Image (cartoon, rainbow, N blue to C red; front, top):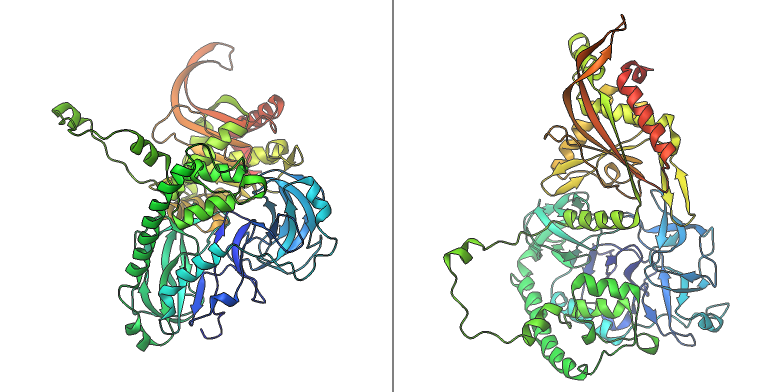
Length: 602
């Protein structure tokens, strides 16, 4: 522990912003903080993707190497999608970064112009947090950025950020040598999490690699492994804590077990009380701010990212102070207000405007029956809701339905059980049939690339299976499903479904996929239309099998009624990838796999 850097902040929001320490030779988004009474005045803190006013430079934004995976500490610049002078919109991919797992896209969360590329294409081992580019808000400011950035133009933070950081560490400054464990970023999009369960209790010995707690992220419940050995001295965020921001302290570790008794029992309460005092002071300052802003807002322009944050937190934008050029409200201004507590929600303003009733009417028996209870939503369900809305708003859905005959499939399933003692479900056979249809119709196994404006074919057939859990819908993936046997698919589906319901899926087991299947036939549901899971371009909704009577012409040419089992399949397809012909060919190929079940054995 003595070798760990004396100070570190590992707050990661989205995919391109994190706190770092410019004095350190390496900048990493770790969640371990070793505090041995450091002098914070000697350090400079900066926020990646935040506006700076450096010496000799116009107002600009420094983009740092983002942490695109939880284990990433450096990356390579594979390709720049934007060149110097290009306009950048919110959500534009500016470059491709090769991480420790894959080559991923780096999306910018602020609009502006790319003024200077600091890490050219092909740069290797660029540390997380190291500046890779500079953007400016106005095109004219590009000329003011020199061709060579002098060393004396490091970004200088606002004094408020520095003072806030000092206050945050005062609570730990009088403690023996220790380590503060912060909420880790367990996924690239995680900005907060819930403490689901503590595996270790106060006083326990912790070895390298031990799982100390389970954290519910925006995608799944993951295990938090400790990278240092020591003793768990104090738990700051107890089991069940909700919406803990990434980087916020959750526990304290010490190296010597004798130091456990030196950690005050009320250290967590002291931190909370200081936050409450800050909130109280912020409330009084808000009242003064209301008078100042009664005639209008304090800013004239607002960035798109700031709008999204204001909407997300439900803030009253008229009380926010802008620090950007020409009175522009930036994302950093909103984040600073949220962190300090110096903001007012719209609901609180409406309550103050509406006069309180002196004698509220008593509830009648009917009113009491109409009472309700607000149930907290899980992180997973919040993300699902957000992505479903985005899918319906941005993806043109094309719907096609087809009835397939189930009798050959049911007979084949019965034969496998009786002759080979192999138990497979109808859903297992559906997965195999869909995978083979995607392989034979490669145009259906693709996704839409917004930057290129074209459909990109996928190299493999990876089927995402919708699994309902208590916390929300999860989609574990059967990779290379077209190349696997029915028995392999069956065992893998059972294993992944159990892990999904237990919240134990690893990121690689649910991230990705080229096509999805949602089966509600067991509930039973006759037919339904599913919503596409971006960036995928298709999802198949599978209903239950129903016995119907149809006229069938026999070998003698006489038409006779015959009872058959039919199942309705509904394809939801991205019309930018699937045209009518591609979707029709896919359903025809899929129906052939059901009617001639032996095709799946070829």
